[in-house]
Image (cartoon, rainbow, N blue to C red; front, side, top):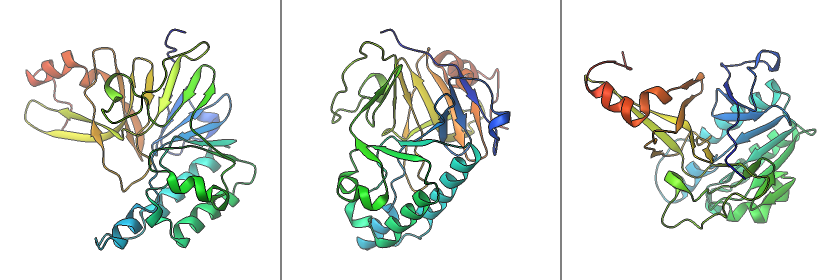
Length: 264
């Protein structure tokens, strides 16, 4: 099947369902996406327990990032009447960080939404999730999920999202036109002629692969270099902004020449 290019809309912060833009996929403030037809909320790379993992290793980092991320997720589920949360990998960071507090906070969130399904697409950090999925209240843990025209995976090993150490995903098959993935933690850099630099998490569409930003607050990121046909949206807690015109190669060259300053 040829690549499926969904109609993508951007919702403002706190946008209620009745005020959402039209589209096959709605990008939400708070680093998540919604498939309105099925009321499915897409998130990736929470890395819950990462701070606890660091503290166990003797690295002093503050607590609270996991709780803040779950509060944001709770609000998205309630605001958009979500029927299913589909987590595209790396729900947890490491077994060392699966403390009773971390597991309990997620289970409390899950129990607060008994009519909402919680499905995990297993990521490379999710070894512990296989073992304690029931404790977390997950309905299922899968390696891949095909729901035409989408394929949901953690790692999409094609194009600019490919890593040398990634296991290659099969190509598009009959009925599948778009791979939706996480793993990369994409970020984009916008530069101005004066030398200003804005680096933000982003949604990234490249060919037949749509990559979600990391939902977790305590995560790093990989800077993407969009091609001439890519689309990019800044993914912030206070909104989503299409910056495709600022980051495509020709536009980057023009901005360096002084025609436009995207950062004031």
